[in-house]
Amino acid sequence: MNYLIIPITRLQYLYLDGTSKTIEASLDKFARDGIKILYIINDPYDPHTKDEITTTLHSIPDFAFEFHILNGKPLLELDISAVQSRRVIEIEDLWTTGTSAIMLYQNIKNVLGLEAEVIVFLDREQHAITKFQKLKINAKSVYRITEIAEYLVKSNVITGLVYSTVMNYVKQFERISFTDKLIQYNKSNVCVGIDITPGKFPEKAEDTTLPGYPYEYNAAGVKQYCLDLLDEIGTVPRVKVIKPNLAYYNSNDMHSILWTILQKARELDLLVILDAKIGDIMRTQSQYAEKYKEFDAVTAHGFMGADSIVPITDVQLGCYVLVFTSNPTRTDLETRPLLDESLLEEYHTLVGAGMSCEEAKAVILKKSVKVYHLMAQHVIDWQYAGSVGAVIGGTPNKEGKLQELEEIIELFATKLSYLPPILIPGVGTQGGSATDVMNAILNTLSRVGWDEIKIRTELCKVVINSSSAINYSPRPRDATIDLVTEIKIAIDKFFYDVT
Image 1 (tube, rainbow, N blue to C red):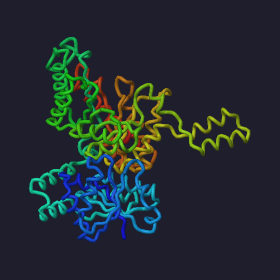
Image 2 (spheres, rainbow, N blue to C red):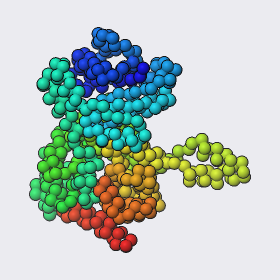
Image 3 (spheres, one colour):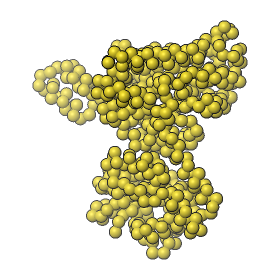
């Protein structure tokens, strides 16, 4: 017998009505197609109780199963000795990112030590199957959501209205990925931060080219300033990315402005990155993702692991993970060394061989991985989830260099052979130089052996952000053009000098 491990909640979410008949019909189709089920795992966040689901399943004739709760110790209740002599097949739903299927696969491998076969139901099959192939997971697509939905309609299990709802559900996954949007839209490498506070409004008419002067020192004034600013930025050729910071619009009287910015950006055909730096447990993060899913991407921190990233990409949002930030106190944590047992053993070996403690310490620290390296590696590991990118500060370190930026870019280029979406803050009033940042990236990519065509292609995923230097410039449009020109000159000069 094949052991089929099913997160039963997925069957309910898939058809949206959550009724017992839906579960029954779904399992009936599996049976008709020769798929036998033994183990069922219940998601702890499922609103249906174990008793409710068990009663439903017991009502199905000749349906044998064992029920287990996924409660933080997944799969441990299974009879591992019995499972190890047989195949384990994991069945998952139609989420096109394939994230939940991959996470359960890894869970089975960690706990049972077995490589499960994965059966996935995907409407955009190739999108997720590619991820499985990269992870060397044996996966195949059996049905498409439309096939199962049609089966349920013909079986009189769901109505035409529910069928329409299912189809609308499918359509949300037909949205172009954020990475593809960047490649399509981002031709200038410029992102304009929209971080507006009344305290910095122009004091005199000659201090600004924006038409709404004087601006009121309240929410209405901020709203009008944002709209006027976007009108100016929107006329700059090839500038297609903006980044409002949630904190500036989080008070009760300001919050609606955020949605005004989004609506205006859509009219101007701009991509919008919401700088929210969110990070929480999975079910809470899902609430953030649901609220902000109309944006194109958000920033988030990854210190709570994949649980805080997956909910974002599952609603087709791009996710920029904080890897190395631009603020002065980033060194409090982000550059701290991480020492594993091998480095500690090497330290004791060096000291035992006669090296002084300070000399041995210097050797070990030079070899150590820093926190920002670890976060960059996680961005690499999370590529399976979708458009997961990195925030990398463009402000120089204490030595006046961009060493950390270069190391992270090199890590991505060598381990991925491509660049994920990269957002670089810190240029302008924070002290970073767009020319220096672009030169650091170009030199690094050239050093690892990339040619001009590949570099230019992958640069479409890089945006350099400037906020205050543009927001409060007397001529915001000209300031934006200046930044576009500066970056273009740096790129053209680099390739001219190389050739």
